[in-house]
Length: 267
Ligand code: BTN
Image (cartoon, rainbow, N blue to C red; front, side, top):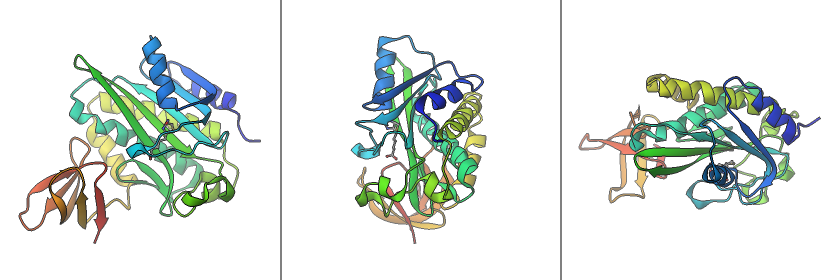
């Protein structure tokens, strides 16, 4: 039998080290709901808020995140990271690693991370991470929202997304245990978060690189929408200290940081 949101909350709440779990039948967006809780405060760092359904789920770049009731995992995690704002993309990559590990556990090694923070299988999207950051007086408050397609059958995915999206149930051809996947996800979030707080970015980066086996590598064409650099060609060197993709540009050999939102296509 498919797990209810109460089952999911119970399993997540049993994860060692989790300070609190807030569970809802329906919210607009778990990121927005968690932000409201923080504003009504106090909410402990590491708190998780999850919902069975989102009526206004948000994806990256202002897109909508389709969030049908009972089928996906819609979960937000509060992080109070400390340290410089420039390093915060590390946390978003970390969340993608945790999501990928949880999905691999459920559906096997076909699941990968796609740069920067998508979770995919067979080239189709299974999940993603949306980071909402607020800074005040030098302190950062980061809400990491993770969405995973778990129990969707083909007809549960909106027709316009069917060629690009999939679910764990479709990858495995089986019913998936949302509660178990959520517990694994949160266990990984806490473990990786602790590593990052200890300063082990190299370890987190190595995990990302291992899971992102189809990440752009070798020669790529970059379409830089955020700066005046336009379209250019180069060779990928890997993730840099800030979590950006470092690419050596041709022909001048300059190493440039490529950020989320820029298109990177292998050539
Ligand atoms: C993406 O576009 O890849 C990111 C999708 C993130 C969706 C999740 S679902 C839980 C959280 N709440 C939201 O409104 N969005 C994120």
